[in-house]
Every structure is written in structure tokens, then in C-alpha cells.
Amino acid sequence: MTTIKTWGNATALILLLWAGMAQAQDPIVFDDEPLEEALVLPGWFKLSFLDLKDDILEARRGRRGLIIYFGMSKCPYCKAHLEHNWGKRDIVAYTRAHFDVVAIDVRGQRQVTDIDGHTYTEKNFAIAKKANFTPSMLFFDKDGKEALKVSGYRPPYQFRAILEYVADEHNKQESLGTYLAHAEMAFSYGKKVLNPEHVFQKGPHNLQQRHSNKPLLVFFERGSCYACDVLHAGPMQNKQIQKQLGRLDVIQVDMNSDKPVTLSNGSTLSSKQWANALGLSYAPTLIFFDENGREIIRIDSVIWFYRLSGVLRYVISGDYKKYPSFQQWRQADIR
Image 1 (cartoon, helix red, strand yellow):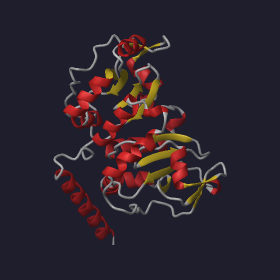
Image 2 (tube, one colour):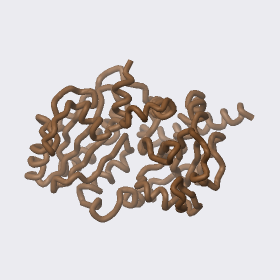
Image 3 (cartoon, helix red, strand yellow):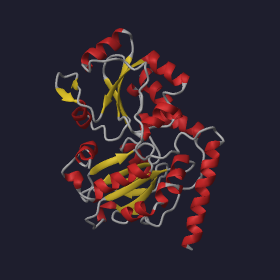
Image 4 (tube, helix red, strand yellow):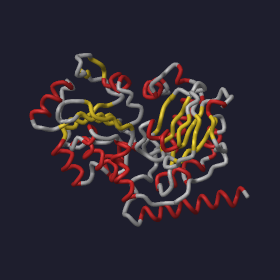
């Protein structure tokens, strides 16, 4: 049975890869091992002294917003973003028309002056802003107000919509999840049912009655979600990931379902209401909770083996208690 299951998932991954290749190059399928060669940032990024108040004032004078881009020189997710998002002429043109972009190296030592006057090194600024994953982007609207933070790499159709969400001030009327739902309707494809995994505990889920000292991992997914299918056919079939998941309590929730979930505080919501209450805007989103029901960290962007394994290690080790920021832990964890 195991052989058949493994072969079936391998075949599914091949089909997913083939389908992606039919669209040229699949923007969410790539090797997420650290790069061998350092990335070169686009020449149109703003040359900044990293005094962010001045950067915002200059952007406002041009009736533009500001994007603070948190990246790393050998980050494969940054490479995917630079190639598939800021490698497309239409996205570049729209970005430049509506935003200035200032780059922050999450391992850098240059001085950054925040809008409140506090100074940091680049790496400490990234920690302060909880830029857990690279690339992360902090958006300021054309009035200089912080409008949105996006953690991790999003595929092109979502990133286009995110730019429009801030530039056209939709953030003042609705959540990003609600806004992106319109784009999701046009780009939804893949299996119509959720992908099962043996590690998922069966519902109905009553988290108030969860008698466990293990952290809880919740997979928020939906049907017709290609990124969900890729996660299950790829990283979820890795033996190391499976072993790590075995050290957690793991459940799967359908973001579009009306099935009830009783939360750790005793309240009962539908799965859809819970997802909305958490402000989810990407499927799949993985959220880790401690034994008391407090959120530890979430992954709400494209995810592959290397990053997923690292986050699992961060949670399973209990290091999140010492390092509340994953970026802080990563910097301390460098060997």
C-alpha cells in the first residue's frame, strides 16, 4: 500500500510539473535550497540613505507609495519573486508608477532610521518588523500610512492584485483576503477536494478539549487550489518532513467550509469564519499554535522543503520561546 501511495503522489507531482511547464515556467515550483550565487537587485530600485521618513516624504511628493523590500542575497524565494513578479514588464511598470522601492538586506549592517526616528542595523530592523521570511514587503500608501505587510513570495496573479489593493486604496474598504478572492475565482484550478494526509487528525475539531503538550499545526486549505496540490505532492511527501510532522498535532481545515470548529477559548466558528477572523489571504496557509492556543508563526506564502523544514525545527525545538521572531532565530542559528 505504501508503494502505491508513494507512486501515486510522485505521479501527481509529475503531472503538476507538466501542467506548469505548459504555461512556460511554473512560478511556484522551484528548488528552495540557498542559492550559490548572490542575486542582483533591479537597477530601478531607489538609491536610499535608509532614512525611511525621508523616503516616504519623497514618495508622497510624487503621489506614490513606498514598498520596503526585505530580501537576502542568496534567497531562492527572492529569486522567484524577482523573476516572476519584478521580471515582468507590466508588473514593473505598475510598481514604478505607483511605488518607490527601498531594499533592506535582512543580514545587512547598514543603519536604518525608522519613521519614528529609531535607528537599527538592517538585520535588527528586519527582526523588529517581524520580516520572518524573505522576501517580505511592507507597503505604505501614497498618504504615507502603513497599509499592508506581505510575508514571503506570492505568485504573479496575486502580487499584481496586492499592488492594486494598496495603490487603489482598497485596503481602506476591505481585507486583502476578501479582495484577493475575486482574483482566486479566475485562477482557481487543481483538485476540487482537499488532499488527505495520514498525519491529519480526524474532525470534528474541538481545540478546547485538546489535551496535549505538543504544538498544533493547522493547514488552512481549499479545493481547486493548485498551490495546495503542489505542497502535498512535493514537500509533504518528504520523509524528513513527515517525521517532523509526527511530533506535532496536525489538523486540516477547509477555508471555504461551514463545518464548525471549537477554538481553544471555547468559541465555535465555521471553518470559513475562523479563516476570515485570522485574516487569511493565501491557500495553503500553515499556522502553528502553542499548547495554550496562542499563535507561534504562520506561513502564508509559497512554501517548499527547506523553508518548511526550518520552521518545523523552530517550533518543535521550542526555540520560539527564546526567539519570538523566526528571523531572529535564523540569525542566531547560523552555523
